Image (cartoon, rainbow, N blue to C red):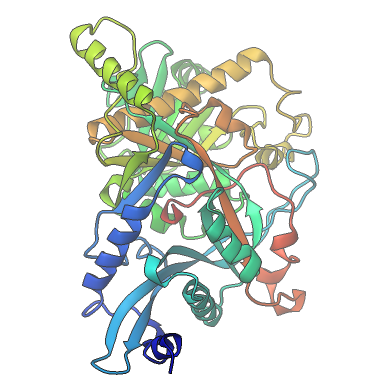
Length: 496
């Protein structure tokens, strides 16, 4: 027998098992797998990018625990040598969560004037955390993990499965689009704004916050009011979750803030005789109907004046980020801004945090919305139609029904709210604020961010089961995979 035949006969046999996660026996091996995958994560194409590491390694389910239903599978490889004892090792892992979201939105092409009507909720499964040990890749393990998690999703009633991937992560894209039947569905933008070393905008004012220069009130909403606002503002937006109340009550949710102009409030008080806008300690508008606070809240919901809204997610409690691939010039420039801020505080220069030498925390903005009077609820044409049906004279095209002053006013309001989120992140010790928006959402033009650190995401979608109109009211549409993109979508903070 020659040497090649001898080596082939002594090659150990590999047996693969896909099973559910066992918290009593699997945690240490999953920690080792996650650390090895994080260590080898490098920017694709040599560009600057963000790489994350999970903080709560003692709870591998922390990224999916917030879903109504979730599951984690592991791939266990058992190596059986010709002689000796068999060795068992976890070489792959995958997680998934199931929820109900707004599905396809009827209408023409993105940004058009076509009439859009709301769809029913669709049960979807979000896939995250697919990891395979580098020594066991190209063996079909990732494909088997995806197949098993899809089977579980089908048993739970999921109609679609989707996931997010970096646009330049070609191995992941090839796996899902070429082998697993997924399509490239949406391409949202991830906007990153570093947290400067000083407060940007706000200071206390009568229980609220206000802009020093623009006369803008910023106040916090309680979860009950925030839920009502979100269902009114985003009830027609793709991927808006049915359990938004669960999201707003999650311990990772920092809160929801609304911004409006003081002069608008003053004008409304003058016109209606409402003279109080105080909030309770929780920021909740819980007064009986007809009270001053309820009247102003109702005026905001009816679009009597311009206002903006966002929520913050404590992503720093879950995941840390690192910036990899940064040039030496960028690092030196950031160091110089910190020195200038320390020794020349009168110089108006952003003080950039040290995000290049160590990991840092990030807070996530979600649920961004801008509402304008006269039926113009936001820049999203889909939402503009929502109010124009009650006001036939209102137009549904942003550029046709607004002048430069209106645009600047709305832009100032939204940016003030974003800088308020920046200051909240600074107080929490975070080094960056992130927000994900639709790639064609006009609102992203007004969001403060650094293009150098920002990037595009890729959402892939697959239909898991056949959909028939006769199966019930939740199946009134054709294949969502064939639906044209809408102007905006609602990135769930649990998916990030």
